[in-house]
Image (cartoon, rainbow over all chains, first blue to last red):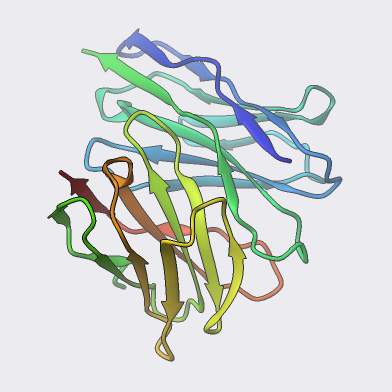
Length: 117
Length: 114
C-alpha cells in the first residue's frame, strides 16, 4: 500500500522568509511518480510538479525548488523569499507506476502555509 | 483553453437522497478521475475512467458509481446519501493512455448533506 506523510500540519512565516514543506512517502514499487499540488482558498488543486522515481535531480522553478531523496523516501518543497500569494494548503502525492492500472494519486493530509505580510 | 469544469458548484441534499455530479475534462484528455476531499484532509481517490472504461476504484461503498460518456465527460452518482458524504468532490482529467500523466483538477463541487 502507498502512503504519504506530511508531518507539518500548519506553518506560518513572515513574508520574504524561506520555507520548506516536508513530504515522506512509502511504496513497495520501484517505479513511481511524486507530485506537489497547491490548493488556494478557492479550492482548486493547482499542479506544481511531477517527478519520476528514476530522476533524483533537484529541480528549481523560479522561487520554487524540490529536493527528491530516494534514500530517505522524501520529496521536500522549498519556497524561497515567500510571498503572501503563496498562502495555501500544499499537498504531496504519490502515484502508481505505469502499467499498474489506474494511476490513482495517494495524497498526504496537506500542509497549510500562511505567509504573514 | 478551458480547464476542467464541474457542475454544480455547490449542492445541499438531505440524508437518503441521490446526487449526480458532472465533470468535463480538458479538451484532448481521455481520462477522468474523481476524488473526495473531506474538510482538513487530502483528496481520496474514488474512481478513474479511461476511454469509457473503469480503470480503477478506491475504497468507497457501492453507493458510489460513475460513468464516462463518448465525449469523455463524466458523472459521479451517490445514492442514499449519508452525513459523512459531505465533502468537496474533485474531478481531474489527464491524457490517459499508458503513461503516468499529470492530473489537472477542476474547481470541485461542494456537497453538503443535512
